[in-house]
Image (cartoon, rainbow, N blue to C red; front, side, top):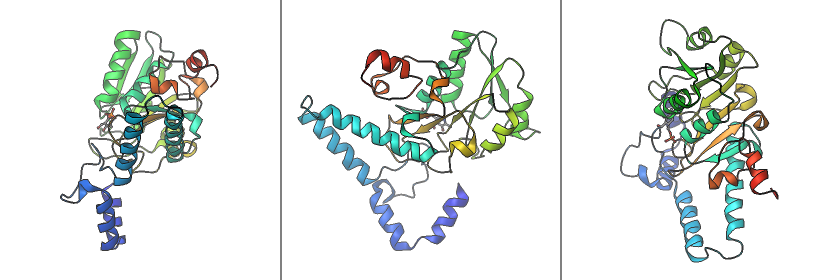
Length: 271
Ligand SMILES: Cc1ncc(COP(=O)(O)O)c(C=O)c1O
């Protein structure tokens, strides 16, 4: 990340940097270094949000309002799909990265004693959902050392046995900035192991591509490197039909994407 920032600072003309800063009001008075918590929101995004709020305030139930909202969600799925190398119908919109992790875990058929391998550098947005699965469904969380004696991928593989149903890890560590080579992870764990990636610090700042990377599920944060508002994110699924239907929120009902698709058919047969 710092290498990219360093390189681009040398490539961009001062006038371009000034234009970018002007488009990102939070960066005009400070050197903004915390895109990993909240990215600066571009003026264009704030204007679009204001327009949408005005439309909802003024025409809450008028014909077309619901369609406009559906179109906005379809567009969000489309651009998120482009970001991770998938189609819009493989993207479920979420309200946060951890909602994506939670949804993916509930959409796994976890039985008591099944193990899930993670690392010792994960965010509470992964640790808490894993803890919930252990408490509610009896899974066992196994923790590989990311910066131990072994390479993190070898450490993960060492913890996998015939009880293991999934690997849940960050693409980019929120603590050290280290990046897991996702294609190498897939090669090491084999084709059948379910790989769920916490992409909070990945998508938007490092390249993501489902085909090249080999993951099954990838969570995207809306409010960090993709420069969106709080309360946004996505869960990308390569094969939605491989996941259990989950209970879903209102906005998820409008997601034509499993793990909610069975519910979709029940709730809105027209979709
Ligand atoms: C690696 C990682 N995962 C998950 C999260 C949680 O993100 P959200 O608030 O979108 O659930 C964060 C937030 O900083 C993070 O850095």
